[in-house]
Length: 610
Ligand code: AHR
Image (cartoon, rainbow, N blue to C red):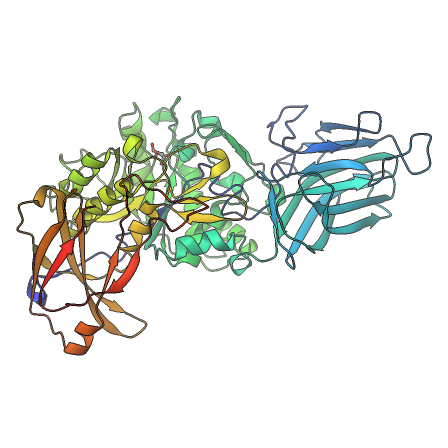
């Protein structure tokens, strides 16, 4: 491997080449990154239907002591369903309530993670013609052990009333539930019941451990909120940003019919931008362009959809004096977000009305926001696009050999047209298992190719980012979690090898080898802001099953004996090609950092198989 470390042949890598793609898939947000613990908090999961689907809420008590139903009496205009709870027992008889009372419980998303010493904020809306005396408690999954409890007493709730209670946990249980019980006869309506840990990232509602795992990748950008989630199976179920802003309790929520689950949309339009800001990542908003998997809006009728998106841009970018900028400001973020990129649709290039709709969106946005860069769904890597675009989207899901070979996919792309946004890549199928070493090796090779072609590839992100093990809709994923734990798959750890690349200097490097079909390498110089020093990083993937003896020669490198002696190598490999991580062995396949003993301008290294 010959590396030229002189600036002459070097090139700057885009500042946001490597980032992340967050999609509401696999309960990534709902019951995941978004820390809300109550599932179906507004009893709306049945949509407009009565009786509504109140799952996973359940009854405490038998049919002779409590009757649950739903009606449309809520105080919230956009989510009218409320829970009607009729209690037939009390503490005096004739029908005596069981000890602990009767009522409802919510197990959250496959169990709530309640931790000793932590505080949880319960917010609920109630109405009753009588004074109420309700116990709010956090218990184990059967209701037998109480972790925290508080009394909710109110003398006049004849109009809908918002109540707040702070619960401090006295014990830990990763599979807990929230209970609301009473021993008082009468009718109580409940609506919009929320339980949030007080301890979320900066109080912004993001689950700390999951946020940290993403932040540790140092993503240059975040693409959101999908994927197919943006399109919907049917347009009526697509993500509509206006339904996801304003106070959480007022959001209607919606059924995401591609990944088949209800979302209360606590993680909404503002929260996605907040997430980007907290990560220090460029936000990339993918919006619905009037096309779903099953239906399309004809171009002649697309105007209202365009206005909706212009309003969404004003929400993000307008100052607080604008109509939608003022809504953002009222939600606690007066400063506009620095939104520079939008994607017009997702995977819709072949659809009947895509080009027509695309052009309408493109022209309207160019006029209103000339600086926003727009991303087309049509692949321009080998043929010129037939429409104007600032970037084009490129997705690749395939077996390991194919993904590894795609390292060269952009070698011959036009150097003058729009640049590529590889917004979804992953090894899938048998080679991937549920996240194998093999998959990560192929992806690492692919990313080295991206790095070397970063004059024509502007951005790249793995997909999907998250999976809640209780609802694996897509396999594999980068970060696997349950209510309390999380681990990275080898593909997650692979991406850590690229986190210093954004904005770094790519050096000219040439590999001469008999095994070049299974070997790939790149070289960068990056500045570590912690010690203000420049580092040379060589990345090498041996995709083959034989060891490779490599002679490395770096020309033009200013290397003294002290820095040579402190050089390191980081290795990602494992005993078996299909090895995976798990909750029991989260770091079975994870980077290991070692001293690089013979570091020099000329050195011999052995790359073990895989
Ligand atoms: O990443 C999973 C899905 O793959 C995305 O929703 C979609 O864009 C692609 O088909």
